[in-house]
Amino acid sequence: MQQIKSQQALTEKIASCTKCLEDKLSGNNKKRSVLVCGGTGCLANEAKDILLKLKEEIKKNGLDEQVDVNQVGCFGFCSQGPFVKVMPEDTLYRCVKVSDVEKIVKTDLVDKKIVEDLLYIDPKTGLKVAKQDEITFYKKQKRIALHGCSTIDPENIEEALGYDGFKG
Image (cartoon, rainbow, N blue to C red; front, side):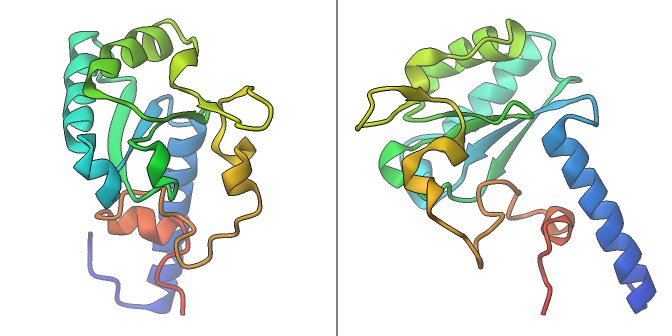
């Protein structure tokens, strides 16, 4: 990233980063995104291996031009991790194992169908829930300091800028 030398340049850079991040998450950039939890609990449960296997399977299936794979921050529901989220559909898979990766790529990324057995099951209703914001655990939460944690790559300063990071 170039050095930012003025408030005007910073404002323009933030606008550019915001647009890029919005396009990435909404699919407007003509690509789907697969987000893998990089929180400590998920990493301890093979999230890094899941990330590498996803990249391998996506390439093997000829999807590397249509699908980006990124590690993101903690999803905050560690007992249900490792998490994999597919965007722009916003489908959240939980308790993912390396052995589930081929199924996620084939079913979701190739056939565009949800992998039902990896969805969260609401303990009160017994219903499967595909979207993170529909899970009871998350519904009443308002993340402030960690608001982009499960959405952006914590090692990518441009994604942080695009998600209102570094505001003071």
